[in-house]
Image (tube, rainbow, N blue to C red; front, side, top):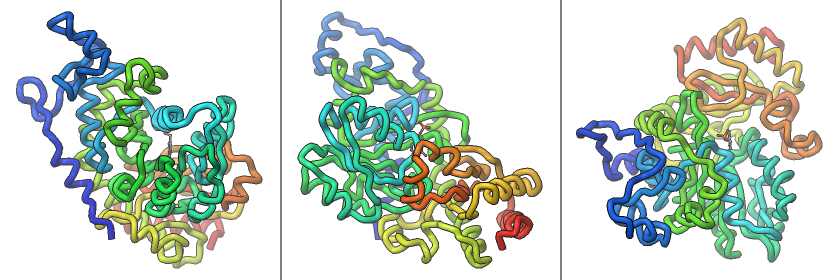
Length: 406
Ligand SMILES: *Cc1c(COP(=O)(O)O)cnc(C)c1O
């Protein structure tokens, strides 16, 4: 059992008071920063000074005081030396991969990743000379078999979107390091629950748009890694974040800082409720997938890699066999039972549901969808934490019976 405690680690980092001693940090909105002595500016460009070297800020696409506060909390949560916030999860993923790979390089990726990531790896990066081989994330030996002399990165999600396959991060880390590669893990589905860097990942990325922010009112991302990699991303002359420019707004950073204190509480509640709903649907005989059910193929692996006391996450799927059946169920759940909302995304306080094959994973070609076990009737549910759980279970039971799934 994993011993890391991300919840505690987050609150042991240096506290940042706001102006006038405020208990909340201040929002630093300045785009540029004054130097008191002209000889300081060249020193910043030479990398001799920076926010953690004599407290020098330069320009907010580089480092910003409010973003730095959020970054410190997130680095502590993931157990990395440093972190850098980005304007979206996709910015975190694309800047990481473009920093680690150049023309001619190769990536071995899980075949069950977020649709946007899949499209980046399959369509855009090959045009820049970076090729990807997709493999089943549950079998580390498939990653090994796909490694070539050009491979630079192994890429996976802790819990794969949308099939909820769990990656063996310790095994992938060992494999990556044996071959001198970097292991990059997208931990969007399992903040606090899993700590990939503690398990051996080199870089952990998140779409903070989801559980971390938790209110579906911001698009945001983060890259957590060692200080050297973060500084490379932010290098004034060559850093991919500096040159591509996906900067987070300090106001967004402040909003997320204010929601971090209840992230662990929320993750526990999402997980407890998802477990109750998944167990009940399983009892009724539905084809439900949830990493907390002993019937999940990687249940034992998942139990081994997660941090104790935060549950198994808020994501579950129901295979409704066909897309019309999945749509009928969503319609009843939203419009008759008021159980949740038909919407993409996840990690909101209300339940969100979508039919992945024809929405967020529609970038994945149909033959590949079949191969990775993504049925056209796969209904993905991000279990919310509102309402009374007993009443919620009754709502979903009535709905699955009404549409004839049981
Ligand atoms: C949503 C999502 C992303 C993309 O994040 P954005 O914030 O929308 O750019 C990446 N990975 C996973 C697993 C996601 O769910």
